[in-house]
Length: 352
Image (tube, rainbow, N blue to C red):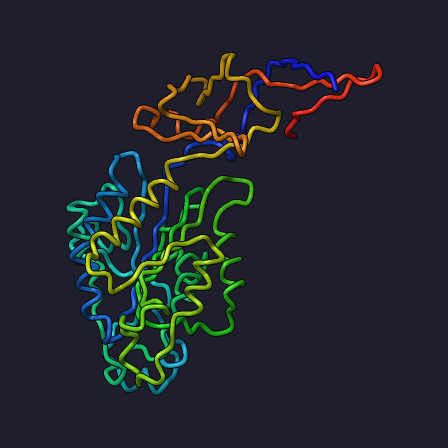
């Protein structure tokens, strides 16, 4: 069949809500404060600089980092608990812990403007642990604190005010040696909730990470605050990470700094790149192919083309900080294959 090529100039403009390079991210650490987590919390605090140095390696990353604890609705909501442990700090489910050493009053989250950022985060992550018979959690919930922390209810108008931003990536980092035991919430329901934290028509992402005692690592001790025969593998957390495309890491990894560096690198990649699928066909790279951000032409070092998905991948750079909220435009020449058979013309190669 005779076949020839035709070329057509194309300019595709992607709406700002879809394509702008938004380096804003709201990060929530959900820390298990049961007694068995004492050593793990200490290792997390001592190595958190590896996370910060890999994630916040460039000043344009605009982050909010909040820390909350697991919750135990079955225990903490009872009158018996409130009577028996009246002196315990009455943190609500999902309430962010105060930033340690902050000079800004009762600050509840860390930003890139926080004084002594790494030191503040190190101390804030050390929320402490409590044995069950001293008032600590017995049935640790990891999912319900996320819903509460990001809610737009009383906490958003009080302790958590300003933490959640509508137009920002979201990241949740679970640090626990126990299974999630949230009430009346399936994994699929929780995953759907997470997806709803960002606008559906945007490229904003929700990233999930679990630093846990994996089911396939029997030597990595599960929650010893319960009898060994009652300790459960973190099946629900593992399932969530699988369906959400999250990252699972081990609490028992020898180099904990490497674990946190992996999370930092992955989150940095998610926040600083945009993937835009070309709608109008395959480009001819023998002709000009130009990517603009807010009318500013981007150097070829800041973008790449992925042939198998017909997508342009744009990478954030400090030089673009003034244009981060502006739309991306791609100008290129589209290839059309034209087959001529029995006097009829048939076009191929359109990718609409």
